[in-house]
Image (tube, rainbow, N blue to C red; front, side, top):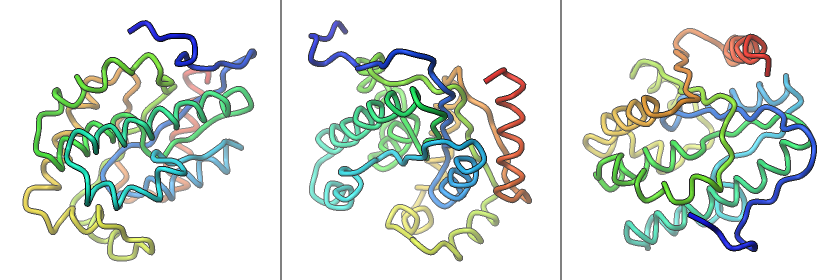
Length: 211
């Protein structure tokens, strides 16, 4: 898609620092790991959805039908891409969720195929920043339940994982599908590993790639 000048992404001159994404189901430990990783790398940390979208998501999920709901999350993703571009000119960036979550989660909630949602997103891919690495976090269901039981900021998405029949299974299948299609994907099993252990592993992987 050829975009008019006002719609073109804005880039700053200079080197682009690493852009690391953490993906996975709610409660798996993405936020905790993002904080640990950002601290170790001296990186900018952000969540997709960023402000101001983050404060509206619950109302959007409640009031909007599937397509306008997708448009809202797409808007948040495009806004996040702008913030990432600017931050990468200064230093590394760590994102808690990115495009894969928009596709996997929207498809799971509305029980549509991942491919259908990816098709909706495709015209806007050129506007998005391509991650250096996307780490897909996995764990056992028992570990996920344990982590959710002690999570302080439990959200509706967390509760729905086990309350909505089939939600967790659909999400896991969807993340497997987007991971398989993602050239930046790295699978990372988190069972029995602390955030610092995982941060060590990710940093070693980035260094091995020369990033």
